[in-house]
Length: 361
Image (cartoon, rainbow, N blue to C red; front, side, top):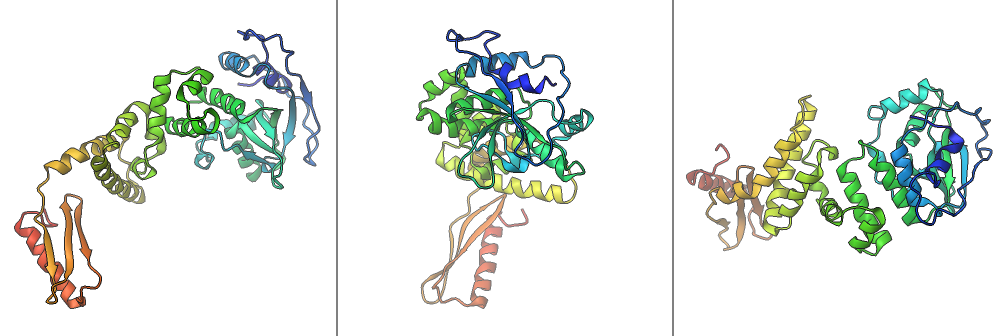
């Protein structure tokens, strides 16, 4: 939903609703500056009803007195980079998951709700960076590359330090259902050290969040990418079940088993995509990952097998054998040639078959 461009961020940062005790600070002034882009400025957009009141009130409480100036511009999105402190993973945006916003911009003849940006220095390729409005930036960029070359990125420029920018972006993202739990968790984990000196209590107070909930988010952020790859999409990683998975990974032995199962599942997911089958659902992936340590303990263990050369050196060792497969190590410097190693492999497989742990089981 939209509101008048020149008033949007000014309203967000005003003291008109639930202002803090220091709201006597003069409200930010919205100004219109000519765009640095050679394209002529667009005519003023029509006003629409006030929306997102709850979020605006939260942003007002957040940034009242911190923004000294608000300036609205029409920008070439190619000259605007994404602030690395934003939670949203820009690389995951595409024409499909931004389709509704893209269609809305086309229907309304342009972007109605301005993004929030700040100026950058020392970057020859960019003049601004996006604090809030990553999907809007992508959508305008996509439209300019697909038959709408004159479409401009509407943004309001604010003067914010990194911590204030983080809080502004965080409140914006709380209103977005398409920002995943994992994106937010990793964003919080990075901000904890970058802006709050790794003090969780201080961060929770500044963001007005429960310390316990924030602690869980930070824990989930630590799940390795190799384990996340077992899911069809990072968006499948939800806070409550992911927190249990993160706790299970605290055990070193269990973590190794879970990582091995995650690798197997990632391969399975890719194979299913390749043949057009639906991916394994998140609940099934989570169950298999959580059950992996228990299943590994219940599986029969192979007797150690080491194939020795006539020189008394190990040439082949069976390191593990389970339902995922057999892991074999070939030793360098054993003196065994290819024929000897082939014999060693046959002997190892026969040994596993006798124990009921062959590859056909």
